[in-house]
Length: 204
Image 1 (cartoon, rainbow, N blue to C red):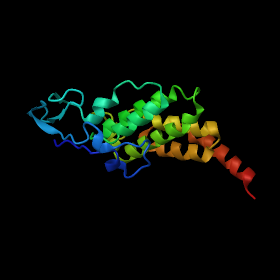
Image 2 (image 1 turned 90 degrees about the horizontal axis):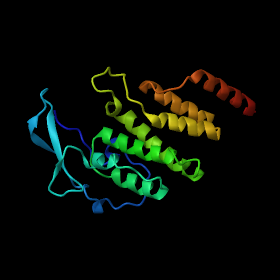
Image 3 (image 1 turned 90 degrees about the vertical axis):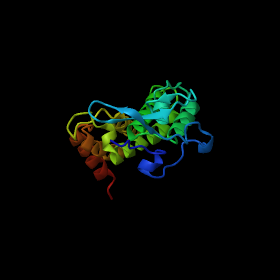
């Protein structure tokens, strides 16, 4: 089986607003390419190898994105912003970008009460993850499960909560409806009713 990988997140979802000013040409791993191993899995699946970002000359089973995605992120806004911006410019598989984004917005979610201004960045990261899973649902599909069985995708719930907290019912309803194909949506009945009442109140 040929490995499906991408040079950057933009190769999956198209152009998006940069989260930080990063020079991709200066990032170690940006020019890395996978190569097939000499052995395969018992089921015939090819094993692909990447060079290690941190140990030159050493091979890794993980892409440059994956090698960074699981590093603990400090609860510091600017560090997270720069780190995730760099990571999304490296080569990886679709699922690698998902877990990198998940790690970033979860790190920020834990400190949102102390830093209300980071809600905008959390929203941007979650929306990137939503665009990613919509473009490549296989990135979050449960291994060996039915096509409509997906792992948890916290971006939907994070966005839903942010929009409800700010009173953006229409946006909350939209993201809840986008979550439906992934089995992640809350009960929409009450939200639709609340939105209908609100629209009736502001109608001329």
